Amino acid sequence: MNLSLVKALRRIGWGLVFVLFDLRLGIVDVLPDAIGYLMVAASLSGRSALHPAFVWASRLGWIMVLLSLGEPFLTIPLTSLEETHPLYIHALGQVFFVCNIIFTMLLCYGFEQLAKQWRSLDILQSIRSRRSLYAFFGVALLIFYPFQFNMGMSEWFFAYMAGATLMALLGFLIMRVPFRLSRVKMSKKGGEIDVYG
Image (cartoon, rainbow, N blue to C red; front, top):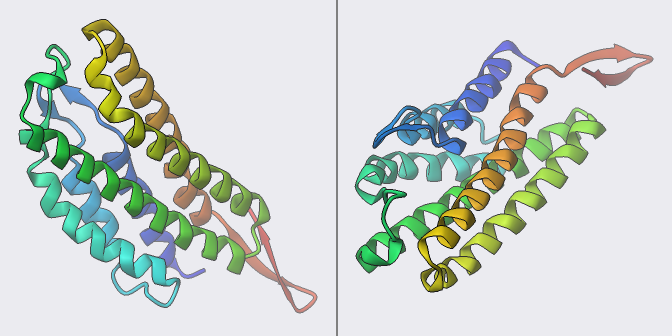
């Protein structure tokens, strides 16, 4: 593995920290998504030879940079019921959420190819299980979203926090993948490539 790829994987990992975690001080986003998408998209530029999924992830990443610049205007305070906000805010928020899921899935498919290529079976299994869980619960939250309008404030707040905590945990597990891949070492043993780390 060359040094440029190691650096790219680590930049992708740090970019995902911005993308997958939502840390706010009031209405100020401490980890702006736009910076994260920019780091990931820039790191994937010119990596089309690794896997086609990286090409699509890079393209979607640049689009998400632009979309995420408008995210502050879509932020709904936890102190107010979502049903009081215009329908377009809900629709745009869900479109952004879907794009983020697709973006994460594309990255996972690319990471999976790298793990296969380097025969790192433990990382490969981790990627597959984490990708499946992230996709399952992401789709489940999308299906559940319309039903929250029948909830009271306390029930909605509990459901919101449970979903946000679950996705943050799964995001953390996926965020660790590029860092683990960047530490994979390859050496020749008996004419075959041995992967460890």
